[in-house]
Length: 527
Image 1 (cartoon, rainbow, N blue to C red):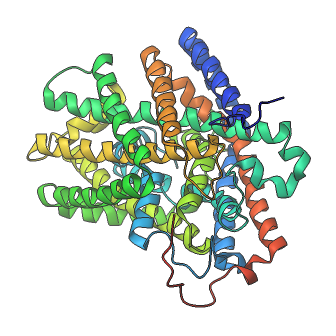
Image 2: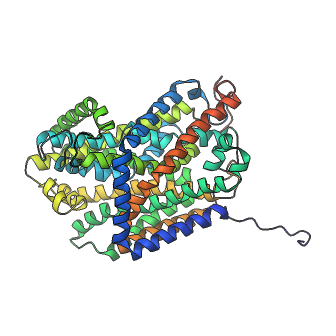
Image 3: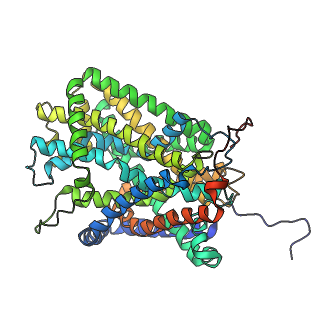
């Protein structure tokens, strides 16, 4: 019996899900470190089997999620407000869109926008000749396709359930298991079933965050090495990574309003300025013409990209069949994180506003980025200024980036600006990740508070240690494939959360009770 007046100190985190998740990540990391090549070979074999057997399933899943997003937006559920209908949304539209764009895109858009077309051009679909002009056009259009409605529908369609749970039903914990309570009941949710769901979320997100940090780092290291005229070494990579970590740790520490929101808005201005700079000092007319051709090709071939399995090719596929499946599977592992974060920042928004903003704003920016960056690199290839296809094929994607940027006037300035924007993009993605994971781990009542600052730093440290450990042994590649494989159970969970959102709103008749009926209250919105 406890002494009078003494209370048991409450744990900072939910140990039942946090400790198993960290143990699982540690075991896989150790195995990758000890058996890197074997791990990669095994995971590649499993993934290739899945691609051969279920590629159709991944493609239809992504397309059906888009249909679900459109249905939720334009049905009676779309007018349901996540919060008090009489109060203003937490952020204005520019701030809100900037936060979602920064979270949804990240530094990956800088790499895919500039170089993704080259992988398709070297191994094109639809029977096109490798390296031909039409293969290059198909490649840039495919780069745009990767950052369009399927991707962002996958990212946002967990958010209706999580936002409704937090801001309408006012549940203290923002967890996937809690969202599924309406489907499986209390016994499952409060038992081992709920714990397994939450562990799957944490493992997938911690692994995905480590991969994102590891894959984003070369974008900066190779460009900085070009400016400084030095070689890329592991100690140099560690220094760059730690600078990034310091940035996203500070941003996550100070919170959404003082950190994430301001960085997201800054990045929109920087990205816009950089695009204008390339149009002015680069082949601006060619870029605009090529962007128009790419958009035309994408619109004409959107369903070709969406459902292309190349089933009649019995000898093996091209780049986009396996890559599209991997892309959708990898996106699925991030769906939980994006959905939880989108829910957090969508206080006061209708479900329609939330979904359409996430579908349209990142798509628009990604198309612009791919049009400008892809147009620049394609121009360098077709004018023989930079042999982009040869560099990618023989040296890798990362090495082609500084070569392309160095071909512009003021190469040092261009590379530095590109690096700064990529860095800020990655910081805004990872600080959002850190904040969201800390929210998920926390034992606090999320309707009344934000996750402890010390917990946010702990999450940042975990992500960093995992990424550096794997980079040191070359283990990011198997973890990247593992993240894609984890998309399979996550897809099932995501479908459940979509159904859970509908079921909760039906039970509460939310389309009648929680909609805007008058002007916003004059009362100031509080976080």
